[in-house]
Length: 153
Ligand code: COA
Image (cartoon, rainbow, N blue to C red; front, top):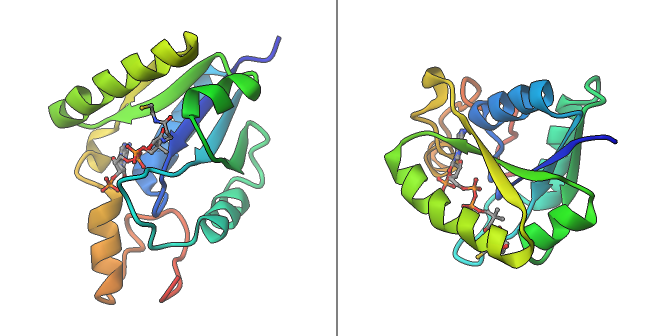
């Protein structure tokens, strides 16, 4: 049976740190499904559909990576997709505190476990909000994002 990992996030935008987690995930699982979900505490800057297209194009030659947009509870969507685990990256102790409670909540929903991969050190300082801020002020963020982000998207 195919072992699928569901990698959820806001991905606003998808960064080289996220790419690193997705690729390393494919070494552990048969398939990694990147799920662009909705965090009720965050307002998006980059349209989710556009981000999906960019990530899909980036992985077009990697049949182990799929991308979806989703609504609703992450744990439920993961189970509906046949995923055996959720996949998340961990950068530091702040992430650990945050991820700990989310992982418990997701396990409470339907028993799904979360597998964490430590972010490679060269990406551990990256966050989508910092990249968004730099991009908004017209700074080239090409070294942090695995594809070109046009101005205004
Ligand atoms: N490299 C770079 N950045 C990383 C990273 C890595 N390896 N790992 C985490 N991050 C950053 C992200 O860029 C993001 O940065 P930002 O806050 O500056 O934007 C931050 O860490 C974490 O955000 P993200 O990964 O997008 O997830 P999130 O915490 O916003 O959660 C959902 C998004 C959609 C997964 C979550 O809100 C969710 O599950 N929503 C549905 C409702 C639900 O089921 N809730 C859980 C049960 S209560």
